[in-house]
Image 1 (cartoon, rainbow, N blue to C red):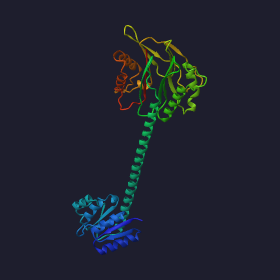
Image 2 (cartoon, rainbow, N blue to C red; image 1 turned 60 degrees about the horizontal axis):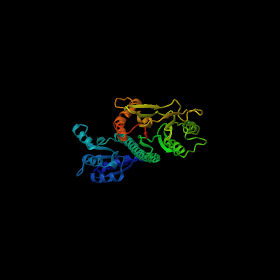
Image 3 (tube, rainbow, N blue to C red; image 1 turned 135 degrees about the horizontal axis):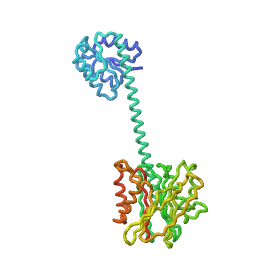
Image 4 (cartoon, rainbow, N blue to C red; image 1 turned 90 degrees about the horizontal axis):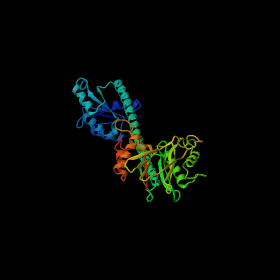
Length: 396
């Protein structure tokens, strides 16, 4: 039942209006002056107020102004009662009433059918405003919930990214030294890499990149890393890269792993023979940079045409062997290192990346952070679109 408040210092008007409105089914309360009316409005929160303009001490305009300052009464419909012609005949008075916050005007003596119609219209508008206010509050609550959920998700993704980072290897020192870069994108990605001695002569080096982003990609990446690190693929010679990729392809078919596949470059360096044997499953080519006696730099791209892991069950992967010269450096990386959108909208690309590596090798090959800084200046956004992973291997 709608609540209506009548404020008028004329007892006859109060009585007539109260009886008329109650007969219409409205919960009606009356007040005999402006101060009492304001107090009743704050207590009752009526849907509609009918208030006389001309009252002593606190008039209808002042009542309306004070009602409109109460946030609990913003949707209350306010009707001002005026002497005949006081508003309708004078535009200035109408403007004063509207500026004070009045929604409608009714002239005295009151024509009851007009009053009933204006009350019905006012209550419809009040209900509409109530509905809009409820929807606004619901949207604000939903936005707050979404913001909270977003913060929780971002915290969980950051925690997952920290966990992935904790699994990555420390740099190697000794006969072979390594440096690593891992710059995660705004989203949790699927990059992982490792380098560890299989035995005293053979060093395994690999980097993989799972398709997509998010927790699913990261989980698959970590699973593959753990399998390789623990050498838990059955009947597999981990010094033979083609066997490793074949075993991975058998174990990680995308049909059984959420339709996710991954690319991987896997190599084994024999320190006595100074030979590198590798196989590549759809991954960007590793780059072998060798500095000759004339200080020129030779670049070999260690790539293949083999499919990524998980596409087809019966892929035969091939090994390739390279003799490692003195003053040689191997770079293994994910496509996030060169698929960078520049200011002109074009992708930077692997050829430009190779040129940068050559320039970096000539100038100061000991400072990998400088290479990273040059790459990051190319990106137009605060965060990379994809993880940037890079492993640098120096053969001394």
